[in-house]
Amino acid sequence: MSRQRRWRGAIAATVALVVVGLVEGDGVLLLGAAIPLAYVASGSLSRVRPPEADELVATRTVSPTPAPPGRSVAVTLTVRNEGDRTFPDVRVVDGVPQDLAVLRGSPRAGTTLEPGDSIAVEYAVVARRGDYAFTSPQVRVRGLGASAVETARIPAAGDESLACRLDADAPPIERAGRGHVGQLTTDRPGDGIAFHSSREYHADDPASRINWRQYAKRGELATVNYERQVAATVLLVVDARRPNHAVAGRGRPTGVELAAYAATHALTDLLAHGHDVGVAIVGLEGDGPAGLYWLAPGGGRERRTRALNLFRLATDVVTPSTVRERNPGERLTRAEQREADRAGEQHRKLIELAPPDAQVALFSPLLDDVPTAGVETWRGAGLPVVVLSPDIVPENTVSGQHAAVRRRTRLARCQAAGARTFDWRRGTPLPLIIERAFAADAKLSGRLTASGSGGDR
Image (cartoon, rainbow, N blue to C red; front, side):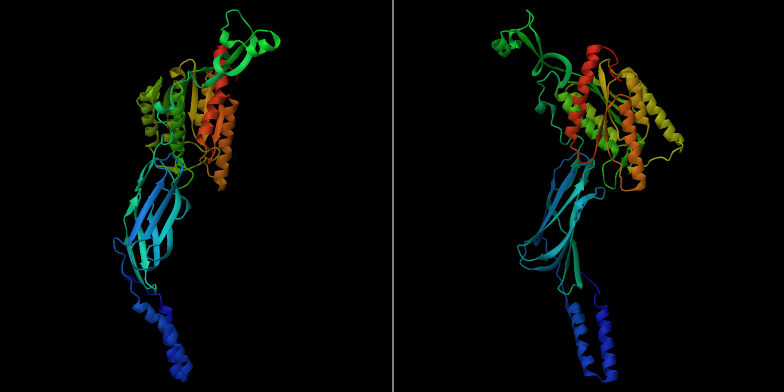
């Protein structure tokens, strides 16, 4: 037990009133000295007994866990007085992992706990990839006079850690099913279930495609065309260079973590619908062609497992830093120039590695011009490109606003080169972005297949 000296002012007041009362012979002042003296006596006599192991019981719940990067995770710590005495002043602080940022609420609370009463500490943290263990909550108990203080840590039942996984909310392939030829629709009609158009009846058309309703109305035979679903080959490219291991604030996921999470979601969705998917990690020194971490296009559960391992490698290599936008005219260091040159070489190598009918999906926060140059290179070679960019730039500072403007300019450059661009703003559901990204590029893919040319620019 520790004792706080809270009544030094009361002691000084008591001494002053007694001295002045004796000098002046004033009994009122001497009587008034009894008031601060009462506070001093109360503090001196205050006692507090530390809580026993079975008196204060803590339970913690963490939901959801595991969680994907950037997800808000709710934490509730409940402390209940199971004893038979009252704690007049209880302060509770939960043991939040140091690397996690509290998004809202507070891990601290204080109240009076009578027997059977409980206090709930509710707050939310931002998930970052990895496993984070909570420490035991700290409880501070004060006596009635608030001079005696006892501090202790009590064990918490329930959830003890938060797990953050890139594939936390992506179902296994076998659960999603593989009943479709493909999920991407084209402008070319064919067999399917969604109406596309109708045309004049040909003698070799199957009876199942005859528009019998039109025949009953007008006596004319017509054949129904449906939207044709095709399987595609998609290369998922994650920009894992050093500048992208930046965060919007302390305890938040890096740009590479969010890019890898979005790529993981796209991987699971595409594989589940029968597409061939390849993976390339740009910016690292891998064992593949041109230093890439490379996985050739294919399908199946084994492909998903190998791809997830590459995504994890992309997020494990660099300590996070803050977002930094270069000043105009500022030159790159030698190390940065080497990294940019290596990335440019890897971008060109992907043109050789990509199958003729492949589409490229780039996942990058676009914090510099290197990925933009890569998009222009791919589009110059005739590859359809989708750019999905997680927004990690804070706009609450002048430098952050400048970086945000430059990032939007890079998105516009990618779009001008002919790529489909999607700005993944904080708070926008990722499944909606993924669905729009690949559905929007589907018709482009259909036109490329139909024409056999480089497509629209």
